[in-house]
Length: 188
Image (spheres, one colour):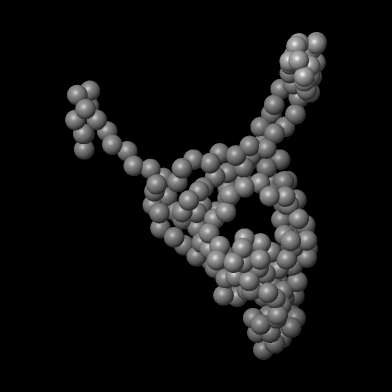
């Protein structure tokens, strides 16, 4: 049986931090991500949550989504028999290909000039997308490290490129507006 998500998250986030949203720019590990996907898909008790614009939380089970797709696929293929398909409810699902497919799928999607939304959470929401960056030339002064004297310049030239960007506004349920007239009186 696969490791539970609580155990896995305890390992990578630290014990006691399993339910916390962590920030930072830690390095990406293909092996760790593969283990993460395997645990997320095979832990039938694990629920991912998202938060709507009104702050209402919704939950979904990734295992149920993937198992449902597999059941539909094997049912359409007419194998196994209907009486045997229940085995998918308890069998470990292989996820090596899925873990490898997620990044290319997201990459190819944003290459279509469309945003990719992250699941909205209580603390954050956002989209990732691609933006064109025009090339430029920049001249910077070079200084002697010891004396601080200017010893010349360096010209840095960059070519046109594409940059990954994100739009991440404060979730609307965390924003409170108070309108006032010119005299400072609250307008309802």
